[in-house]
Amino acid sequence: MKNKTTKQSNQGVIIAIVLAVLWIIVTAILGTLGYYEYNRDVFHLMIIITVVTPTIIFGLLFTAFSNFRKWTQSLNIAMLTLPHAWRTIGYLFLVQWFYGLLPAGFAAPAGFGDFIVGIAAPFVAVAVWLQWKYAIKYAVVFHIFGAIDLILAIVTGTSAFGVLPENLHMIDPLTAFPTVIIPVSFVPLLLMSHFMVFAKVVLDKKSKKQV
Image (cartoon, rainbow, N blue to C red; front, side, top):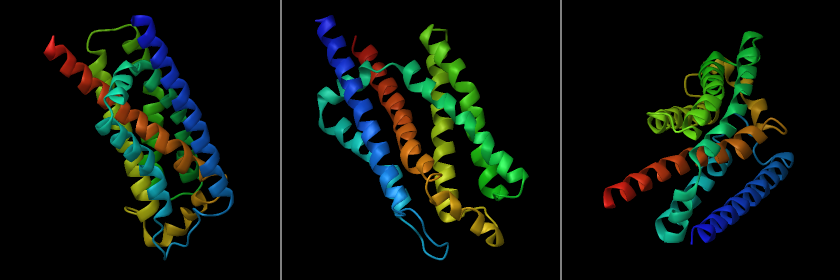
């Protein structure tokens, strides 16, 4: 029975990876076609829709299908945490801010937030993998911070919240290919991984209470 469950879990992971790759390909194609580019005087909804769609789909599947919830519970928190290490690339936002290429209102929170998450990710993943005391609590805090960081970056980038009017034009190049791949391809997948961790933690707590 255990081998069957493990096999189903592995199959689910493979399917998830395939879907993620397809998502990246589709959004990259849309990016090359310029569907995410917009002038600052027009509120562009395409990026927001692209970012929230995977999470909404996950929520619907989680709510409607018990087998999907079981698969979610079988996921490894350490493996969902480790991919966030690549977010150390956020230091590039800080570099562009330093050279006056990005406004502080966007680059500072997005850059520092991503860099902190990226540095912390391997340590949190190792703590969970080795089952250190309070590791799950640290992981939850990590994923809450990581989710807020992504949401804040998207809100700032699409609405220009906190950015001076004279600096708005600096953000626009981020909606062009290939830079736009980061917010429309990887941010949604990373955001969904945060919610996968939250869902797993909740399910695990319920299982322990029922025992």
